[in-house]
Image (cartoon, rainbow, N blue to C red; front, side):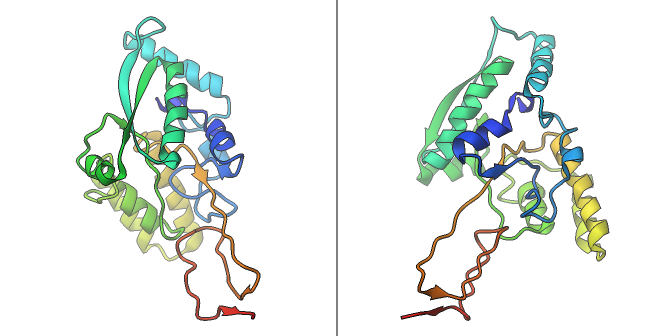
Length: 231
């Protein structure tokens, strides 16, 4: 399934080109911890040659007894709002390239997260956001054993040790390399395939002065002690 993904198509359709391809960590230049392209492109499904990836995916499906006349049928669960439904529709279309027929199952917001927490789904498309561009947030929340936001219940004790080791590392360059290696391992294991990193815009009235917007998060720029209004 990961080999069927055309990530650039997600970006072009959903964000009109305003997105980035990456692993769990936010890609450069906005992000400080994302893998460089030479590492990213070696991962399953990240090769820019989408047709090559899909051919590999088709070959895997052939070995499992599936093909053009014998597709796997699944439900693809998504929250019933456009930000979730639209990419789920694109995913379903792309999965057909590797002989997987997806049926969209939209779930009302009041029920959706309860279903996800209980792992009551076959395949689900979800949006994830982290408060700050830091590996401790992204890794422990999304891939840590027992984390509520680890929706697909990934748990690897050895990876947890690597999460902890990078968190203790004081040398920024060494920590960055450790994070790259962790992210590479997670994506190679298809622990949670990342479709793309989207971008959001911030707007404010011209009379609002001294407001600093962050380029790598929509969550952590709410300190208004120096903001003032020009009347």
